[in-house]
Length: 615
Image (cartoon, rainbow, N blue to C red; front, side, top):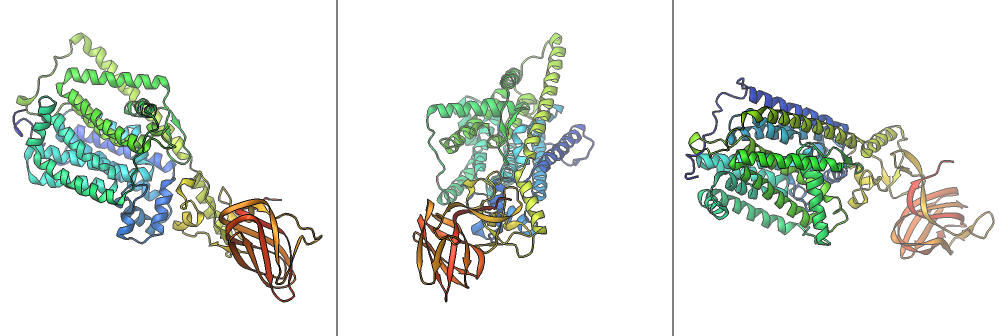
């Protein structure tokens, strides 16, 4: 390349509008519509999951403030996502359909802007439908279009990637400053939703160097820096400002892998189980992961077949188009950046064994892969004088068998994609959280209005204990319209069981040793303190206590557990009282105060609230 603008075609004429009868454009729009409705159908089979509930709870507990929007979630900076979640929580509540709608809109926008990019970047050809189809239907992006906690980060980042590349391509062609503004806005848009969008900066540089600069590695880099330096000056400034702001707020999430074998296992899993199969319609089989999205589990033969297809496409396109080699190197370079980021932040943890099998970690790779496929198969949009020499045409005798083979492979990839998507939908449809919430809503509607509950965690398959304290029912249901009433002390509290049903409460844990007084157990008289041993000690912790007693009169009682103390009222007759206490030890001390008051008890339990067994 010897000049900056004369060797590429001007942007296509857009004055005719989108609906001008262009069959390629009409077909592409139909593909976008199909992908949006198909993915929305898959999403609607499922429900909210895991991180969704935590983010919704945080929104329900907070006002719409700058502090809330810019608060980190698991070290992720996502003010755009928090803003959307707050608005949906405030005006809709704990429901799933608004998020499915938003993800469908995001996917439609991504499809349209990517189509626009392809028409700017590539030569006019029906073959541009191949990279478009890869972006729209690749199973690697299923999580981004079905699981809100993933989609709210990844869809805006993918859109930002496309918009930034489009702006840079326009700047390379025209040198107009307005495209630099568009480039900056695209990067800022991505960073507003996901800090990982900082990779867009490196991607824009690598793509420009790979596709628009010639020569060896050093000359390519120098040409890219010198020729389009305003882009790099702008992006560098944005990156430095963002990183300074982010690093001052975040905690380091860098981890040290346990061994080199862990790194190699991760890379092998990422490539063999996720990336390579995912680019050709795999993984065909999924491994369920509770309410969250499943992880990849391709059959061994599927992995080998996918490698054969990918290698064949790379070799064939490199022989056909010299620029294809640079395109595939661009994909490799971006994949290396993503792998390095994942290895530095995901390995060395309890989940490093499956990190390479999680498609959401590489969803952004699909955008780059689709662009590289388009450049390799279709070719860059250039003037005839600047078109590099291509390999000679395929001999006549090979054209028909090659065409038939390619058609069969394309059909197989399409069928594999449909199968993989369907199986993913089956896994995604199994949602314990949806059943739990639906049951709670029904149970609360039929429960007496004075029903009160003791707080306890929701089931682990709804919100895992790692999310504590946001797995507590009192916080989980903050966004629910008619939510349960939670108390810290009551005579007849209820609890929700693992299915969401309202049950009479009891306490499961340590109990007192039986008393020696027949018909009474342990006798406590007014002003007297009685020490009662437990059948097993309790460590210091916030516990729930149940005291079942028979009292001769009304009064008050004090129970001590180690350094913890709780005062509760007692009523004449046979009664019980539930309350909370913070303490630990191998015995309790019970004191009652009141005129001519005596109290008998053989039922004191210290532990966690639970449903009383049905008789």
